Length: 171
Image (cartoon, rainbow, N blue to C red; front, side, top):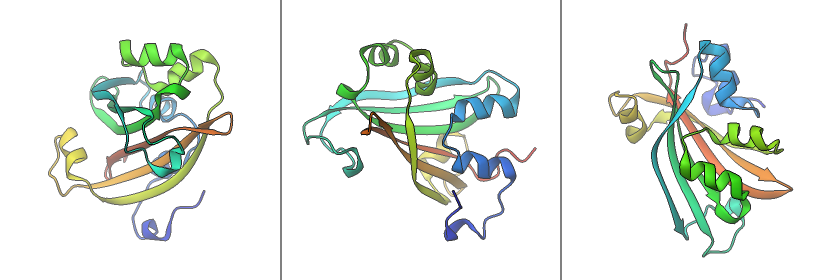
């Protein structure tokens, strides 16, 4: 995938480009990059009905799992992620593990040997004050983000947006 024109003027290093365009596991890439195990720290998680993004193609009253997590390597926060999943389309074991643990969802799908298709629907650069706060940075800190739709068995399963400070991963 090529970067959108809006990001052509932004100086990105190779790893940042990979993070923004991969259709694979960000958790695994971060682990390779840092040489450390990556953990997911749950910031917020709830099940609510209504307000599903149109791309999820689900009934308006479908229960949705809203989740915010921080991926970290034990020393530093690396990537903030917000996700929305259609609860009834998640397997019972993934539902239970998401409720009971902070395991990254990609790792849960690996345990199940689930095939998930990721389609990037947006890549963006710009300030995101709430996310910057999770990194302990000023509200106007430039952030990089990507949003992707997850599908399983040709049906939308969820949407994830991942963000990280634009000056991350420069080493």
